[in-house]
Image (cartoon, rainbow, N blue to C red; front, side):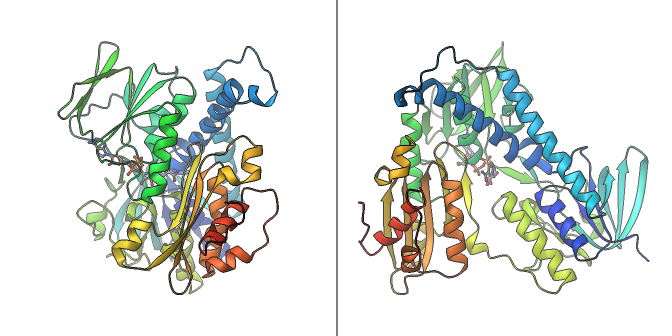
Length: 461
Ligand code: NAI
């Protein structure tokens, strides 16, 4: 008999969630992780620590600028970056301990070390206790991704780094240059601007947030510029190197830029090296992503893959959904991921949140649609909280009225998008959403009003 029913490789949000679900379904599960902390990139050096910094930097900016206008007078407000980082580390540690506890509760065997597929349902684990070998009926690869870089960029793990370094700067940069105006560049760029850095974002394309609804991204660009972020669009970075206590960034057809820190955020690539994929007969595509069928089966018998390592949106919650669907298919017979309704959130301030199709995608497909837009400046709660910027946009099918996409830029957009996702998951029309009673005064009323605006009957705008 095999040692386990399932061995999960990687304890990120995809892997650890799949392990827990498989254990709930009565399987004997092991999860291999080479880092001492469970939780993957998301918990250690991604989503969670960045949100801790985002909250702290937001509070600082509010205290420095926002409170005064509302009659709360503060003096002597200053930044203690050491404590900010300690708070971030505590949050990460606590949540990491939480996953350990969940593993114990669900009787999941945590194997420590680097896993390698050996073929024939076997996995080698190179850990502190030396090499060990385990067998399982099913193996699930959930090894995630790592930051990509560009040729010509010399990452030195200090002045020129990726999100990992930008989450742990020991002082506020004087001038941070961010390469790439995607999720990471904007989240970390806005965090360090709020902590006091001058931030210049260099983006190859002529817009920010490629792939996101164009009008929403354009609104975001306007707001970030107003906040003091500098953007150079159409800027192709060709090289970056550390030099005499600073850095130089070279841009095609422009003067080199000097700064003291560089964040390289030009995408991520799958973690497939040293995994023994070849030996086990697991095929990858031209970009290195593991090829899977719609039920997450790889080209090797009994080997499955989910999350960043198979491509698609590199989002923790997409990996979770895939992990659960994969093991539910294996152990309960049914599991499903609705890729049409995977929300995406850029955690800037204001947040940018999106679900479903963008206007550009609908036009490209030739789908006729109606559009309702409602600005937060016309929303009472938004004004009362002092954050009137941004808008909600609802896109609905021209004939059936089914909601096809919702795009929000505004405070708490990441929370508000959940309602849109639920509505879309249930196949709601814009009228369905518009007829739901929303508590007053809430930010969520802006979503209802945008749904009303689809038929030009918004009340407050
Ligand atoms: P990204 O793919 O979001 O953006 C990379 C940007 O770099 C693009 O705008 C691209 O045009 C630009 N770029 C590429 N080459 C360039 C060059 N030579 N010069 C200037 N610009 C260049 O990648 P990012 O921000 O690194 O994030 C990686 C992944 O992590 C994304 O897929 C994202 O989904 C995920 N992520 C998600 C988060 C969230 O859900 N809140 C947070 C952080 C990351």
